[in-house]
Image 1 (cartoon, one colour):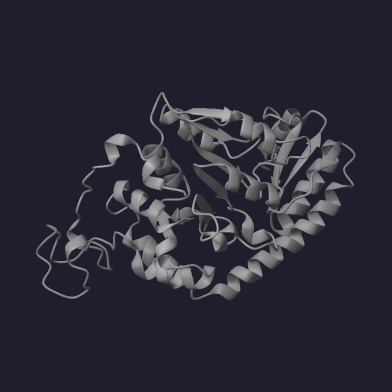
Image 2 (cartoon, helix red, strand yellow):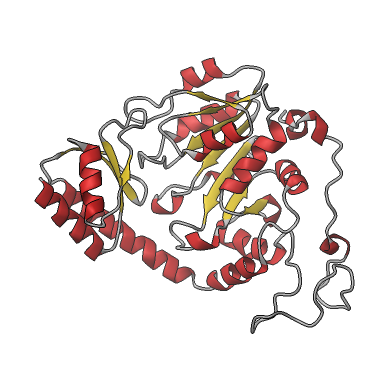
Length: 348
């Protein structure tokens, strides 16, 4: 039986969280003289003088409808990086506990571990960028608290084997984080719909990619109420601004536009992939389930620098484990992709 509180750091077990002015009174109307706000309004044309809902109830209700989950199973953060950091702060004792990451993968897992003085044990993906479950099992010990799995994976672009994720979820007694930042570009079902099956599962998604809201910094974590109660206990009282909540709530009225953008990106991905095959210097184009390609080519770092001189900015991954000679290419507009291909042909 999974028990999140049994994994919790000892000093947090009796923590009394900060009680905000909006914890005691849940209504939207009244004479608000409790939070030392400016009663006259704001210096902007629109009034932002009242503190926002600390638990984003209205926004969570709408997201729950879209995602097919219960609002009680949603945590909203300042990007996905906030719940990642909160997991370290909640469950990992600095200098004692460890987590497992699977390079090449999203770099913030390691950075967050380093910031929190937590060992990040690296278990490399296989040669075809899949999980090495037996190696993960060997790396786990009594102080392993979290296993991070990115799928579709960044920077390789592929979905790892879903049955291997399930295997990890079944054998590991701690938290398994499945980062689905790029899931909107796949046709598979999200693991967020399987929370009842796996109580130790936490799924990350984001509004930064398919939804085109990267500047607003809104990430979603889906998990059991038990896990999310702990995150809510230690998060900043007002971790999402009222402006972000209001803007995203309005944006969610236009789901058709998001679907159209995803369709267009997938079409552009296909045409870009075909065009990249015609560039002789590119030796390998890896299969992708995301909105980017990982390619391997001769003199990757030099090509990367030459493209920057032309104000075409890619991501040099040539020094990342298992990505030697690799560059990550985000799928752009048709025009941007054409400019990239033309520049590569000229360099070739």
